[in-house]
Image (cartoon, rainbow, N blue to C red; front, side, top):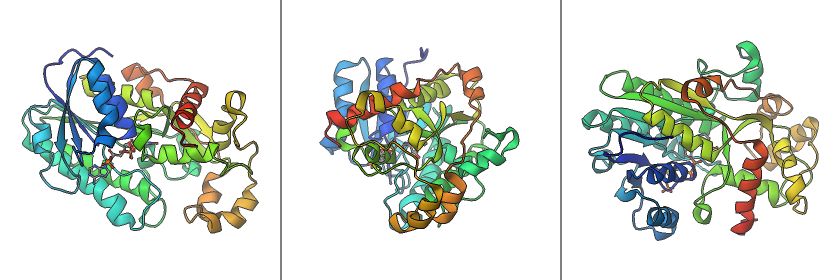
Amino acid sequence: MTITDKTKPVLVTGATGYVAAWIVKGLLEEGITVNAAVRNPHDKKKLAHLNKLAETLPGNIHYFKSDLLEEGSYAAAMEGCAVVFHTASPFTSRFKDAQKELIDPAVKGTANVLEQANKTSSVKRVVVTSSCAAIYNDAIDTVNAPGKKLTEAMWNETASLTYQPYSYSKTLAEKKAWEISEQQDRWDLVTINPSFVLGPALNAASVTSESYHILKQLGNGTLKAGAPMLGIGVVDVRDVAEAHLRAGFTPEAKGRYITSAHNSNILELANTLQAKYGAYPLPKRALPKWLLMLVGPMVNKAFSRRFIRDNVNIPWNADNSKIIKALGMKFKPLKETMEDSFQVLIDHKLI
Ligand code: NAP
């Protein structure tokens, strides 16, 4: 999209991340100064891809040391910004203490960033990277939804500290964001709610996102015996970044936006790769639900019987018409997203 006011810096929290890298790239292409809030501005490995972008693109990057759990640590990074993109939040299934590692950074971090917006008079728009995980918990919720599709009117009502805690962290964080934004009227809040994000990682050498953790399992033989027909939505990381930019710079943008391109499942994702990458040990068949019920809980504690019952062999559906109509979004085909993601795994020897 073409951004009209390029004079003010734009804050991106969690700028080292998979999604954030593409937002930063889009801003730099427009010649904007990016205030990149990162945990460690001296970590050369984590910042290498961002520095490379800044070398060739017209915009500039300034790094700021910020931590979600350190109150006030976004003050310097936000100074003078009209638009804030708040992407930072842990997205991982590898945690020991869900409260400390997922919920606290997500919820306290959102409060920290948005309360800083209240203290920073230049801020007019805050875009929070929420998730479809704040809208639904299990694929069965989409079947039970009015019209059998998720909409922006819905909230995840069943995630908890012990069942789908990442989804719980995103639900609580987005609720906190709306609560804080509704107490004032200088800046407005827009949320981007992506489904499962795939597509090429600019930060492949240091990628932490759960997206790549799952993608690797498609190509490294983990799912060679078969994949669960787990209903999910998928969207390309480049489209997610574009959605953020449209949400940040379209004055009329309002409320929540489901950002999901394809109603799919894990086996279908693998199938899109067969033609080009059939030499890799991709899953070729669906694992039966009864077998998953039997062994799933032993293999992975997140794969509980409840999770399998409510997600496997259940179609996933979301209504993405709001973002298409209101922000003019177009989405990449699934095959292109999958092939471009997989090529990054190969190029960076991640499988
Ligand atoms: P990611 O690459 O792991 O990015 C997470 C970012 O959060 C990193 O920059 C990380 O910084 C930062 N972060 C984590 N804890 C922090 C803390 N205590 N203080 C400051 N920064 C912290 O994952 P991602 O997939 O890009 O996720 C970005 C956002 O998109 C998250 O809000 C996630 O919930 C949301 N989302 C992702 C998906 C998906 O499928 N990928 C779908 C929907 C929504 P470090 O580099 O220092 O660790």
